[in-house]
Amino acid sequence: MKKYSKGKLKFKRLFILLIILLVVILIAGLILLFAFCLNDKFEVSSEVNDAANVSDDIAANSEPIIVDNLIVGAIYENTWVSTNKYYLKSNKKTDLETYVYDIDSRAGEYIIEDVYTYGDSVFVDSTYPNYIDEYFAVPTDSYALISQFSEVDVEERDYNFVKKALGIYRLYNSSMNITNVYSGYINIDTPIRIISLTSKNKGLFGGVYSAVIVEDLNSGNSQILQYSYTKDFENSYDFPLYAVEFLADLNGDGKAEIITREVTEFNVTYSIFEYKDNKYVKVLSETMKEK
Image (cartoon, rainbow, N blue to C red; front, side, top):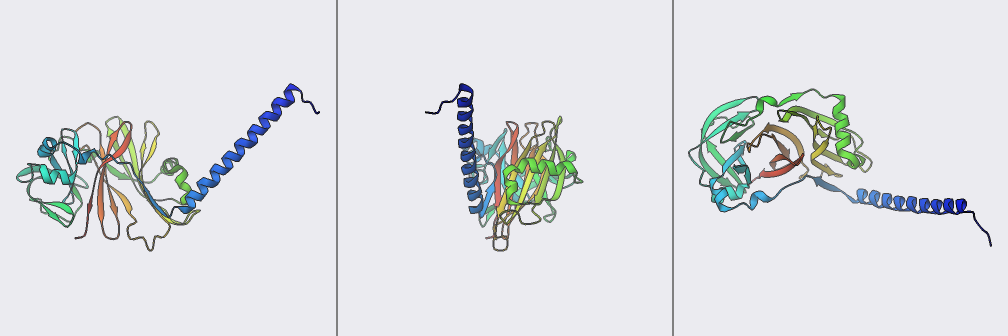
């Protein structure tokens, strides 16, 4: 019978344990790789659904948040209200003073004249005469941060932000095509950069992606706001292309929300992301649908 010294026996056990660990890692890697291969299409975006479950009293007093004539939801005392809840319950649908902002500055004060449905969406008519330029409207101008939000040039660090945020999703695509970079502030002390991008070439598993990434410049944390991937772009009519629209404190909590736009072949969707617990979460989203 072959005998081992305590040192050799300990080494043998460690070697066996290492082999087992490598086998487990290999199996997990193969499973992950297989899962990636099976994914033909998916989206990544956090969302909070409380806006549809607010009380009738809150909804009754809520005031609309409007983007390009579309009501994307409403707000009442720092509480988000879904579009449907606002439309069904709010008492503030006409003769309501609202402040309109375009890409560059505040366009002025206007009056909401009517709230109506068209297809599956809820729209407003107001005294604001321009329905061509992109804009958003809120019942107060106290917290608008439009002056602290601007498009800037792409820098090398932006590619590093994107790589860090995408993490394992980088396996899907081998290239980055940054389309726009915006500079702004979560609050007066916290600068951020918001990056929208699309893939330029097909990656390891084929397909293309579109994404919006936000970077907290103080903490160095990068986060995916929205990400969508498809293998078959030519035949994917519902594949969204993402863009950043506005940065503004819509709920008056002293922290800026991010408004994004996603465009598919038939629809346009606007989403609002709130900064909460050191990250952005989607709190409102509404689609401008064809009738």
